[in-house]
Length: 434
Ligand code: UGA
Image 1 (cartoon, helix red, strand yellow):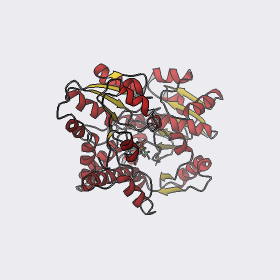
Image 2 (cartoon, helix red, strand yellow):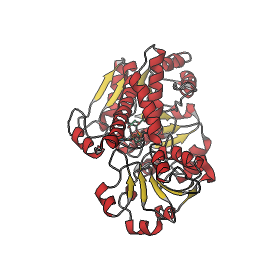
Image 3 (cartoon, protein in one colour):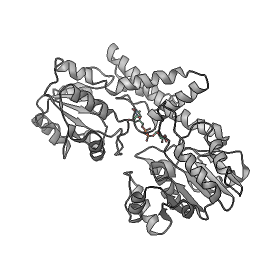
Image 4 (cartoon, helix red, strand yellow):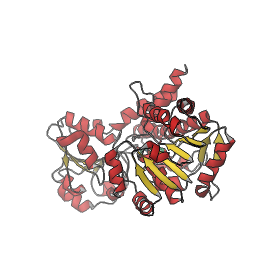
């Protein structure tokens, strides 16, 4: 099938590359000339494990092409994915200007029946707006389908190729047939394609992200309480996660959720709710708790140093909002850097992938280290912000020889309490005994 993908951000590039891998002829369209130029030269603009191999193979074999020209990009395409940004506007609601601009431009360019697919996370009712915008200029029949994406950064290729489910919002039988054909190679193991109306599909995406953010936040509050009553959140996680009604995943307490999706989508859903005269009280609580959770370790750091952090050298391991990504959007590390610098600390950071992105935001307010151990030289304490695997089994002897004090503030619960006690560390983690 001939496919066009408009927008080559995270979702667009993964969608385009993976559909090329399943044998389709894909053209990716973006207004960013520099980016398109680089992709044509075989350079992939994002870090995502496993994507580069597919990107290069499909580009080399001619199934994946790039252009800045919308008309050229959609020529002959049976389906057009819209994978454009929906940044939060000033009031927290998703801004649709990019999507509607492309929808307006598309109308007059359509030459034959086409399925236009909203892949971005968009507020309920967007597919109708996109339909209206395309209708203004269209002279041929078309359908607008809502097909939200559930992939996680870091495991995007696997999530895309083996989705738990595919959600398709459309009432058109003609569009359903096209979508069934497109997704058939990805659902061969029996994972379902769930058809529903457009509004329900749009709502499904927000409900999924808001539910997961709530699940994490609930565990963060249980963790906060565990510290006060002397319980261990790891045991609680195992104790409740084995109940199949609750499930094992997304129960890890820590320094809050971040990234480009959960914070933005929870906020947008709360906004949609208010616009419909309904106060979604759980979501307000989730947002408030998460805000506090991000810098939860700072009071403990303050307390340990007698409320005087002036001139203290703090080592920070991990900057990305989660492992296997260079994404620092809404990353708890950034909030901690701000708090520590404000308190007078000198901060030395290391992250395997995200340092370039952090440098573009905080500049030289922090010192960037070549490896995790360089950060520790004469450091008064270590703070852990991201659970990169390489931090899980470090060389503790080497750490001890470098650190000024044997103290770790761990926002991701990487180590066992017994192990730390045995080695003589003062160890602060989340939801566990201190
Ligand atoms: C999330 C969803 O998981 C995807 O299904 C969805 O498609 C995507 O948003 C999106 O809307 O595009 P992502 O933001 O890539 O994916 O990252 P997650 O792996 O879901 O992690 C989100 C945050 O939750 C991270 O900050 C992570 O550290 C935190 N988290 C996750 C916890 O604190 N505890 C957990 O147990 C799990």
